[in-house]
Amino acid sequence: MYTLHTKARSLKGLVAATAIAGCALAAPSQAGDWSANAAMTSNYIWRGLTQTENEAAVQGGIDYSHESGFYVGTWASNVNYGAGDVYSYEHDIYAGFAFDTGDISWDFGYLYYNYDKEAEFDFGEVYGSVGIGAFSATLYVLANTEADEGPDQDFGFGQAFYGSLDYGFTVGNGVDVGLHLGYHDGDFAEAFNGNEDGYYDYNISFSKDGFSFMISDTNVEGGAAEGGYDNDQMKFVVSYAVDISM
Image (cartoon, rainbow, N blue to C red; front, side, top):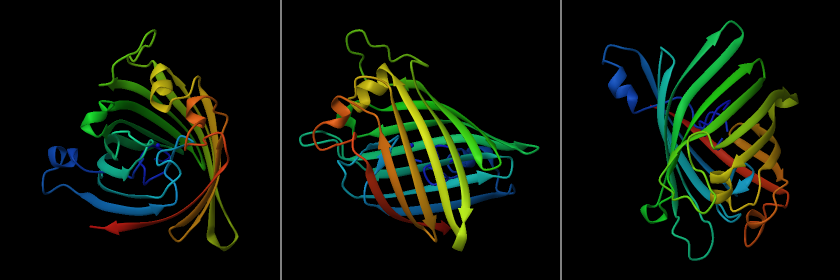
């Protein structure tokens, strides 16, 4: 970055329910499930924008989910933001709680994005998602960052956000179709992405047996569309992912 940001569970975007806190929460006698995931993709797209200058990425994560609804996990990918930058990887850690109330599903948690130490741009978000049937709505809100504010910028809690609407359904031959619309805005979002204003992203994806094909586009202008990013152009992404039982 799903229903939520669990990169494997949804969508990146986030990865399925998960791992660290499981050690703190669960005694050996308590039930819980460990899982892992691995993927290769022709382009790492996050909120409509390439994170690899339109090159391929190798990704994977480990998750732990407890029967109570608690989950925790970690996920990683290579990244590339241009010649001479200090970014080489993204490593995420997240924890949350997912549960149902009748026909409505809920998911709340915290996600921390870790990059190379030299980048000094790590940040964290709190998120919440609600799902009804095949429809879900999700909101990520900036919680903290180690990045320094520039002139007239505010990187405080809640000063940047990403909201999305998603809908999924299955068509003939078991092909899953996903529709996505998102909006990203705030001073931190602009500083991280290099764009001048808030922007929309939208995509349609088709997946079956681990293979997926996505058509993604945005309305970005400015820095996010320059150089090797071409984020103002429609992107076609092919990927393959596997789930690993543990």
